[in-house]
Every structure is written in C-alpha cells, then in structure tokens.
Length: 338
Ligand code: PEP
Ligand code: MN
Figure 1: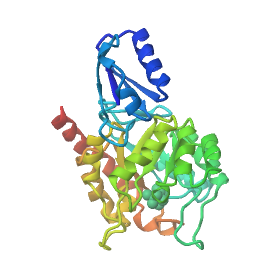
Figure 2: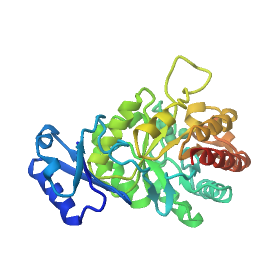
Figure 3: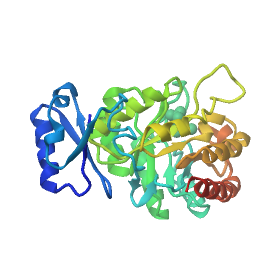
Figure 4: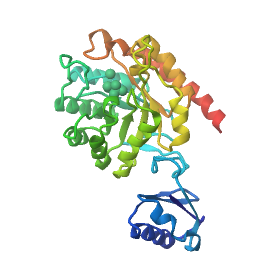
C-alpha cells in the first residue's frame, strides 16, 4: 500500500500518516520527490487498507502496490534512484563505468590495473579478493590482503572500489576497506547475506543469479532495501540457457524490463556473460543501447597471465575505445528518451 500525499502536504501531515501506519503495526518507507511525497506501508496491507485515508489531512489517495517487491517498485518511487559511491553516481540518466581485473593478484598488478582504469575513463575500480571459484583447486583470491591492496590502488588513482562478499564475515572487512559491496551471481539468493549487506552503510551491487528470474532478482533487492539499505544497483550478467557458444546468455531484455519495474539503477556485465574478450564490445554496445545505467567490465593489462578469467578480460586499449563508443551510443539513447 502507498499513501500518496497531496502536493504541498506539510511535514506534520506526513508525520501523522507515518504514525497511523506504524500504530497499525507496519513499517514505513518515505519517498520524497520534488512535488510528491509517497509513504510506503511495509507489512500486512490489510491492516492499513481499512483505515479511512480520504479523511486524513494532506492525503491525496491510497493505492495498493501490485508487485511483491514493494520498496523496489517504480510505483513506490516513480523517479529514478541515484546511488552514490564515494562521489561517483550511478543512475539518473548517466552512464557509469566500473572496470578492473577479475581478481586482485598482487600489489604491482592492481596498481597497474587502477592506472589503466583511471586513464581510460573508468570511474569505479573492481577487483575480487574473496573469489567464488567453481573448482576448489583454482586461485581463491588474496582475502583481506586483497582488500587492502584494492583500497590502496583505488586511493592512489582516486577511484572508489567495489569487491565481492561471499559470507557474513566478509561484510565488515569489505566495509572497512572498500566503497561498494558486490553480491555475486552465486549468492543472489543467500538471504542471510542479503540481510547483512542491508544493514551495512555501503552501496550494494547485486548481480543476477544465472538461474534466477527477474522477479527473483527484484525480491533479492527487496531483502536489502527492507533491511534499511536504499543504495542498491542491479546487474544483469547473463543467464544459463542451452547455448554453449558463450559462457552465459546475455539477457539484454532484462535491462528494459528492470527499468520499467524498478527505480533502482540497472547496470550489466558483458564480461561474465560473454566469457570471451572478443565478444565483450558487441555485448557492451547492446547493453548501453538497451538503456543500462552503466556496466562493469573486466580489464587486464596482461590477460595471458591473469589468475582468473583471462579469456574474457579486454586489453586497456580495447577498454579505451569502448568507453568512447559507449558514450556516443548513450548520447543517442538519452536524446531519444527526452
Ligand atoms: C565477478 O564479478 O567477479 C563474478 C564472479 O561475477 P558473477 O558473480 O556474475 O559470476
Ligand atoms: Mn571474473
């Protein structure tokens, strides 16, 4: 249920509505736009539906939120949300570039990686320290040491950092060193972890599970939002289909579908979808043309020697050209949507 306040409703009227909802045993989520204030009721809707809202001062009307994802829904928050990662914004008509190696492999390597990202138009540095590897025999990441190195590299080049957390214990460590927490595809439905990052005071990059529907992705986001963290960015990274020519199948349609259903920023990851460097630029063009707010892409200055995902890492010069091209595509998309 959302209570839509009249334009110009006073703070006291908004407060009164919140008190009525809370007295009925529900939580509230307030969304203040330039003109409209919406108050979401989170909990058993039947308890507030029977209250006489048309007689409540300052209230325009009450509406049922038809989707199971309440806080994430566009209905609750018609304007696009903007997530701020240490001054770098994602959403609201921008195109944001998150880039870097799959994994932090060592000090020199991540410093070089950060330099490449910074000098070629990247805005947020990615790098895994707690890697989710399919095989237990593969390089698992440098752990906390990797977080420290990522942070050092980000600071040196003025780039906020994003890194994956896999367990509850990783969250405080990543919060100490990094600026954005990534929930990887394999953990999209780890509900305890979602609740934990929901309580963290850092933006979250939530990647779609490769066997998850769009509805399940939105409900995973709802776990984080309902735990109190409104800084959530969604990421389409490819789903598993019968096709084996690519590592996963890039579900480009997820981008416009998500943009219709939610106000949260939507980015995509052409690297893990493609699994092959030559396919990354064409998929990236498609994602931007489909209306994404940004992308996260794996870049490595020496993919041959990379300890993880070398096949899909693009070279710095490819990244540089891609940034220019994607900005041009984004410019066209923006003109069309005005
Ligand atoms: C990653 O971004 O490092 C990663 C492992 O991606 P995903 O969770 O999408 O597989
Ligand atoms: Mn990777």
